[in-house]
Image (cartoon, rainbow, N blue to C red):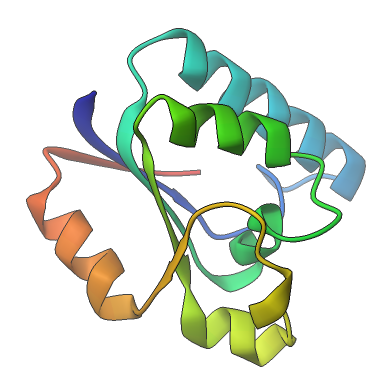
Length: 111
């Protein structure tokens, strides 16, 4: 496990059509699992949707969690989208948890 934190703020990656954003995110998460996984992956804004029912990334996220990555999902964002009961992977935390993880990470990558 390394001391890197990855931030997901979108329901995918990049500024492209949704299908391409999600395809890129799936490839990215799969590749993360083949190397040393990040210590923390945090989700806020539309990024929380990646951890919920219907997300095409649930298998990749579960694999990263099984390898020891801590997945933190923003509670405020979940509640704003009405998704609090739809989370299928990770732990629900507050922005304080995300900031604490960010402050202790050696490197933070926002995708």
